[in-house]
Image (tube, rainbow, N blue to C red; front, side, top):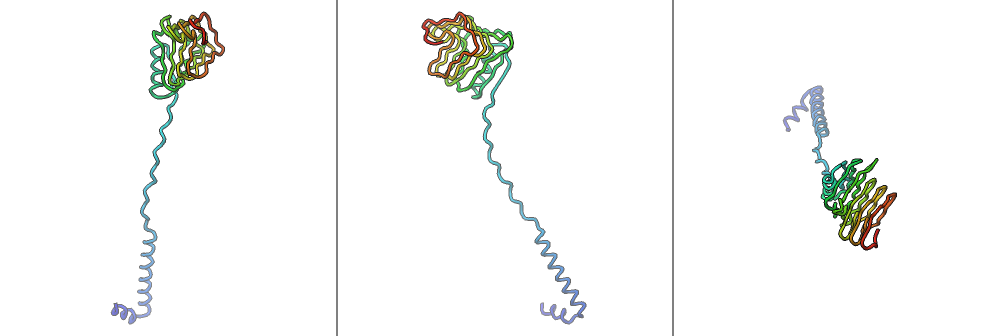
Amino acid sequence: EVSSSLSILRATPSTRVAVVMLVLTTLLLSEVHLQGAPSPRSPPPSTPPSTPPSPSPLSGLVSASSDLRFLIDEAQNHGSDVTVFLAPGAHLKLSSQIKCTSNIKVTVASSGEGATLDGQEQTGLFSLSGGCSLTLRGLILVNGKALSLGGGVVSATGGDVEIIDSTVKDCSAGQNGGVISAFRSGAVSLIGSTVTDCSAGIVTDC
């Protein structure tokens, strides 16, 4: 280093200026290189797990009692409300009650001339428990027959029961509720509907 410094000092002024400029240029380039170096990338923030979506309501258009039962069973399996549209003019014959035992809302509806649910004087139409609510709209409910409770609908620990804009005919129960029997359940409503020739052995419910 001493000999190099002496060589620079002994050099001509123009040579010393060139050497100094070379050293300064080298230092500046080194500084620029350090400042321009890209900083290491930080990992992207982790995405929190999304909340599972709530079950979506199910719906379907059916003209057979087996399809009606299937949709209501599927809704119970998924814990989802369900709306089932019955084809106008359809006649669904039941050999046993349609059961709902889950805390969901079931709507069965038709339009125009309406669809018929027929118990064939063999069975009641619907059995509800576990908080299940039922709305029947625009239907013809006939020939529901229960040995004890609810010729049309029996609800024991069920939710609300609504029969809207419907016709109920020839339904009977051996004890209570020729049309609807409700025990420890929600509200019972018949709105814009007609009831004809329905009976119960003990008349304490509607």
